[in-house]
Image (cartoon, rainbow, N blue to C red; front, side, top):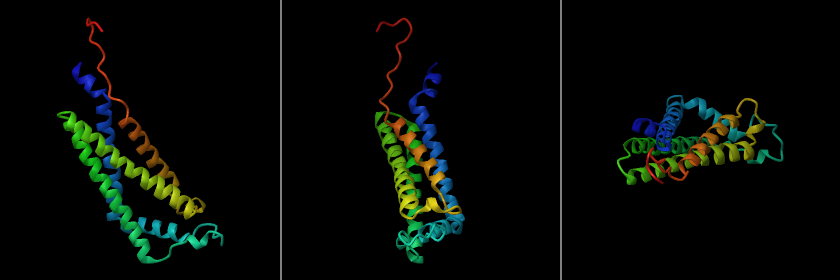
Length: 176
């Protein structure tokens, strides 16, 4: 019963969520590094706004400087890499969970990693890319759906991470 109680605990769920999202963001980073040009093109076209409706009222926002585009893309990759490292470390802490200190550390590291996701995908891709650079207008370079998926995943994980600790149910035959 102890194994079932542990496997069904919020901590076990958080360990699996942290591990799963570590793999997810880690694969994103790997893809951005090993297939650099594909997503560099995405960032280039979103910032250039060259596939939007090209309204003169918004085109002044376009960024076409190759150096700025590359710096933005490298910043995104760096941000994702730091998030991956935080979540990987949190995964180890969730799995070790030798005491309350590692539990608190796992919670903090997970929260920080997922908060970084919210900032990147919510603030960076949905708000700045989607609205400022009008990515929603592009039929080819519109990353709003994947950004929303990542934003929702991180949000759910953060909510679960910040649930109050579970108290153990009373054992059969004990008085409460």
